Image 1 (tube, rainbow, N blue to C red):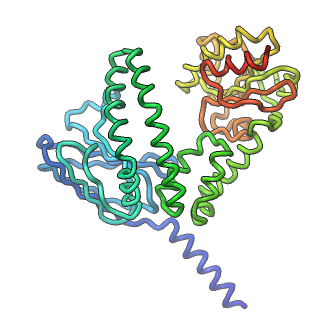
Image 2 (image 1 turned 120 degrees about the horizontal axis):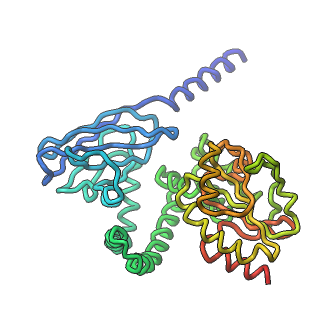
Image 3 (image 1 turned 180 degrees about the vertical axis):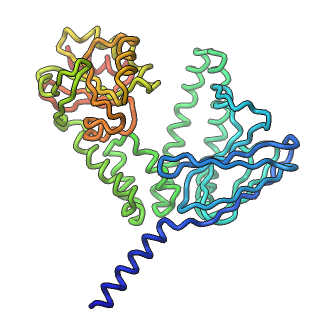
Length: 377
């Protein structure tokens, strides 16, 4: 019995050490047609930390070496040596880069004049990713030129053209989504599938997400991330449409406490946002318009800010002229209400009926007014 226990402990320790063991990778590149010297930037995230490395090409050749503990989605980008490093929208939109899956082993990058169109090979995960790309190619061949043209028109501030192109892109985007979902379902043991499932977890719709999650290989579901997603899914199910909203109490801008229960009897929009969130600020005028139309018809808004500092929170409220209720504990992403509701991305919102039951989620733009017109007849 003692031997079995000791062996089990040793095995557990070895498994734990193996889970975090660093393994070597080498990226060997050969891209012809480049300027004499070009900078190659490698970047990826590990535990919310951005990891970066770089090399300079010589006659198009370069090499990057490092270690990694598990497969990760990474990016290779070409950058001119004389680049001043300053951020611009144009640089971001038209960066010559390509995503790939980095893991242990040797990777090769071969192309002509561009990183975006180069072929990156190496590792079983990247092989799966190339398979997915090949399956989606008939759609991405149509989508990418439209995407490039939309970026150009966006920089020209041609909103009419941007709207027109987006309408053409929308059905293609839906078909690409269908192709990705089909890949996930048919390759449950692939890290590429698992990564796409994780990518769909920022805002969870239980009806769509749960079948995807349940269909994944058990080793993914048993991982630390898998257990995190299972917990997040459980919260999403508790805060799904048709369920009573979770009660909460939080301080407003004056320090006075406001409870969700005090708003019972009204239609209430629970709005998660932050002063630093661009999309949130862009959505505020739509909420303000709905509030102006329906506040006198038994409609209230309570905005929960994921700010950490009081000053920018108050300034954003004043700058955006937001006349509704505002609360926050100034704990950022650790906001107690946000944690209870499983909020890991903003903006998000929930619409409650007078009984405190969730009747809609994530209403944006005209959809908020349309829903209010429907329920506040």
